[in-house]
Image 1 (cartoon, rainbow, N blue to C red):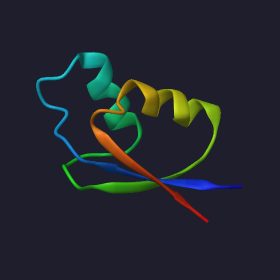
Image 2 (image 1 turned 120 degrees about the vertical axis):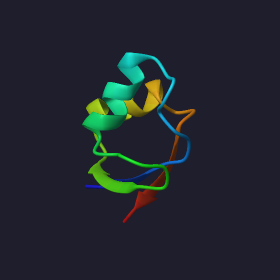
Image 3 (image 1 turned 90 degrees about the vertical axis):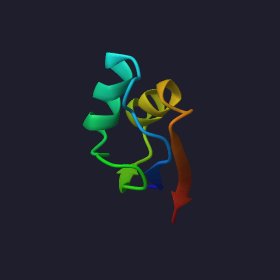
Length: 60
């Protein structure tokens, strides 16, 4: 199964509380922090809501 490399490109400070919770739930803490998650619908839905804050790459 494919994986996604998610990097926090912009700060979550001064964002909507829902967006801050999504960033925290994905395991992102500081700008430029990176996590690798499974590519599934739940993660894609979360990324859709914070697409303006993150950079996403597909990892094989």
